[in-house]
Structure formats: C-alpha cells, structure tokens
Length: 292
Ligand SMILES: [Zn+2]
Image (cartoon, rainbow, N blue to C red; front, side, top):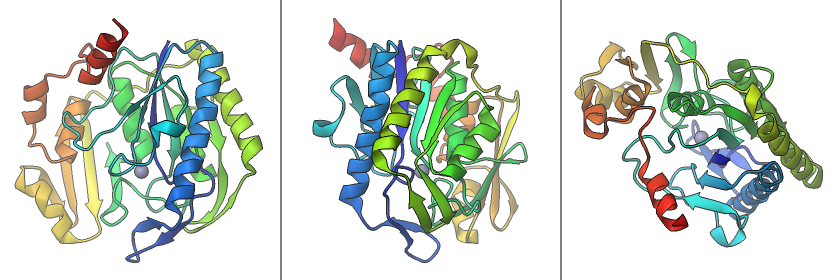
C-alpha cells in the first residue's frame, strides 16, 4: 500500500503562533515547531508501517517546503520538497490513501493560527457557495485521483472542520485545543504520539470503509481577499470579478479550477499537462525508477 502525507506547520502541538501584520500569522519558535512536526510524522509512519504500508511519501507542504529535516525523518518515508508548484497537483492515483498532518482550520473560524492559504490575503474561499479551507481543497485534489482522505491531525478546530466535510469515519487526532487564533493548550506529547500512531494504523487497516470525496460536476471557487488590489491578479488572467474584493474561477475539472486559483488562465494548465485521474506524477515515475 502507498500512502501520501501532506504536512503543514500550524497544526502540530507546540507551535507558538502570533499575529505579525496584524492580520497574518508568524511562528515564534521555528526549530521547536519543525521538531514537533517531524515527531508527529514519525509516529504516524510507525502506525502506517504496522498496518502494512510499503511506501510513504511526505510532502513538506508548509510555505517554502523547508520544514522537515530528512535526517530526523522516519527511515521508511520519502520526502517531497517543492519550490515550484508546476504542475499544481502533487499526488496521483497510484496512492491508496491520503493523510493530512499539522493541519489548521480555515480563516475566520478563530481556530489556532487559522487561515486559508494566505494569512495576509484571503478572507474566505467558497466552493459552490460553501466555505472551504486547505483541508477541503487538499481532500478534493486527492479525490480527483480517486484517493480517499483517511486521517487528519491538527488542533481541535481543524479536526472538526475535517469531520464536517469528510464524515465521522475519518480518523482525527487533535494535537491541541484552540482558545482563539493565538491562544492554545497543547496536549502532552507522549500520549499524542501514541494517539497518532494508533489512529494511523487503524485508518489504514480500515481502508475499505473510506471513499474519495465526491467532486461536483461543475465547480465555482470564489476567493474573497482582504484588500481590493489582491483581487487584481485573478481579474488579469480572465477570472470573473464579483466585487472589489472577490474573484470567481469556474471549471468542470477540479485540477483546472485549482490551477486558475494559482494563477493559470482558464484551461491553460489543463491543456499543458492533460491531467486525468490516470495521469502519473513525475515524482511517482522517479520513485518507481529508484525501486528498479
Ligand atoms: Zn496551511
């Protein structure tokens, strides 16, 4: 079995977050935060290996892809680092399961360090009218390739958000309890690592009960920014401007929709990469070559 893990750096226990600008997030204790993330990942990997995972690929998904020290990482895990999201998707249908570790809730939930991709820019995103955050977007991307999300870990608000979208069968492991955006109680770490290990093992052993999220046939993604100028870039590539703060992307293909959100004009990314549910990501081809 092959498992893909997406990481973020706001959700592990022990990240000391503050406001910087004052709307955006910053982390005061980066070295501790990075150690906390790798400890949690290693606990998850132990559980996955116990449940029979043969291959684990971890994407260092926090901005800049520079939060995971491979020297400290579980010996069975491959580490994917991305300085340039081209193509905009990072996994493919060769995976059996998708997991999100270190996740955080969407902007304006008041969960710990909550934001939606850009804590300095995005007020909210909606998919076909429903609020959506990073957990949702990533789960839909996995679903495009037929891969189910089986586990999410982060603060309690992120875990609630994940279950509301993905259902009560989803394994969630709260790492901490958020009081507000910059106040939190972190759970004791040895018990947390035990919880992560057992949840990962249980999720993979119960893989059959998970289905990929159902993607709407036609997707409209609105992004409401904090300042009108932040909406200009979308308008310039041809997205519809709904008001001074808001742009709308639309597509019947989720990967194309997400590409538009990341700055590709409608249809251009799709035409260049022709990404279908059967498409193989270059990293999969590279790992296959390593095995031979
Ligand atoms: Zn994030």
